[in-house]
Image (cartoon, rainbow, N blue to C red; front, side, top):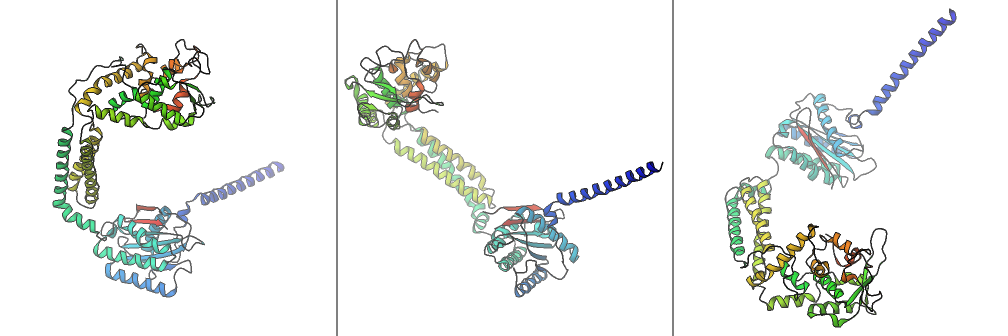
Length: 530
């Protein structure tokens, strides 16, 4: 029994020790998990008569402290605002500073026994060991937060008045400037800018009407200029895969469709030369893990080039060849633009009367009207947001002018009626090839159409068919990728280069933060960082 009693007492004692230990750990855990910013929101030693506190010991000298105390007392007598200033060393961000300056205002209200609606606080948290790093915050009661010192003005006081002097370590200058700005705001309201005065004057009277009239007149001019563009006399034709004629170069055909010489006309012409056995493709960069390599070109027989465009492209290749071989890197340079084919195509378009006179000037006029609309829209937004809501109508009208002017400038064709009529069958051919690419049941003679497919920019939609036709196991290899007799490969050999190797060369695939918030006790504040 004695043993049992002793054991029971020991067990009871152990339970009490465990309970005490658990309680201690819980208390320590709560302390460890408490919000740091809440702990930093305690401001010791506040009195009802002192309005200036420098807890750093070096930010303000006695004369500066007395001067700021006098300024705050004058602020109270002149405006009724009971404001306290507090400077200390603390590593805190803008959000923490905002929470802390609200707590400072509330503690000041409690200590001084004053009305929280007219109480205010300015807090400066200086970065320990850094004279030019600090956070500043201001919090004002609802009398001013709802009145002449609203939230955006409090943010302006922090960013424009309190923070700049702190970047130079000037705490006294920061507080003095802040108090002066606060006094002016309470008396007169936030500073009025020239734009605000303009918005209240012309921006609310004649300016919205003037902006609207300018935009409407501009839209009428856009409509009049765009209506004067050339229009085809030939109706749109049904899509077809039958080429309009066999004599027109692919580079010229794509120029008719796109209204100007295109870079894609060059690789289209290269394929036409390959199909005519004027040149052949050879491996250049070996296939890698993530690509199928690139090609180079071996020039074979210039006499097989037909027409001035093919002659021009041959010359472009010959200029970059070494021992009749053009490496892949040089081919990429050739493919970047139309090169000398542009002059040939433009000359042919001009000789055929396909380019209308004056279209360049009209496109400039349309673009200029669009830019005018954009300028009016930007200015109108600035005026409207400054207090002239009537200006929004002019903003909307000018935005429409911006879109209309730029879009019509892009859409305005440089072609004449004759040019548009000549382009109709080629547009139908382009549309027919595009539809055929999406329909597996519709056959296309890839050998005949390949230069056009590439020149017209349709290679991406034909990719699967081209890859299949250039597979080494294909029963019908593309003629352009089959080496002719006399080349490095025997005549009639199957395709040795994938489409991806060719397309890899020639065909392209498709300052400090500001925190702002409202307080639980009414009013609002702002805080910022250097």
